[in-house]
Length: 95
Image (cartoon, rainbow, N blue to C red; front, side, top):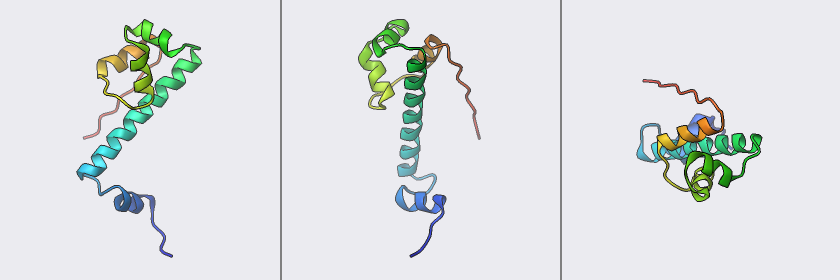
């Protein structure tokens, strides 16, 4: 049985870097990570989705969709959520 590195397995199963399939996968993964971070921070602050939505000015359903990576969200909303949670967001741009 042949062994594969993680990079080789990703290339085979998802697509090579730069392909549409790989870009979509990585984008979805990042959305999922953001949702997980929001959910973790919300729970640490002992807030319900409804309470967080009230702080941000959005409905509970939007918080739920964001935490579960099932809907579109704007960067502005993400920033409002992190601000309401008292959380810092660090961005790193690589070119």
